[in-house]
Length: 126
Image (tube, rainbow, N blue to C red; front, side, top):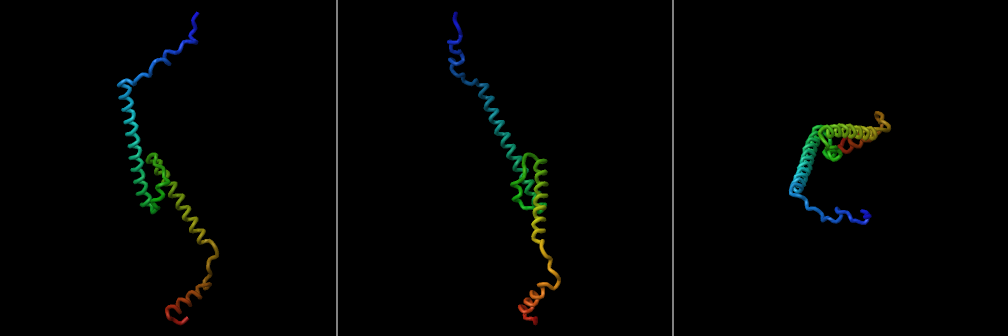
């Protein structure tokens, strides 16, 4: 009785098949489609970045913030622009408040010495 355990598989013995002409053409078409899709995504990204730079400029924000925005699509870019503007303005406001924090000058305190020095520099009597 013969068994198939010792018989090598026919697929293992067969030489690798060359791709058919149709398979080659299909492969070329897929590569071209992939390249076109990649170019289209890059073009869309550039257009969204240009729109974002203009929006940042219109809002009085630095253009360097454009590097932190999302360019998946227009709604994602707009949403990330809104979040970025909010975060930037909050950070600026906190910085201003920190600089302004501290003891407020009282009237007549410190101003007299500066005023006297300015009058002497101007040639006026102190």
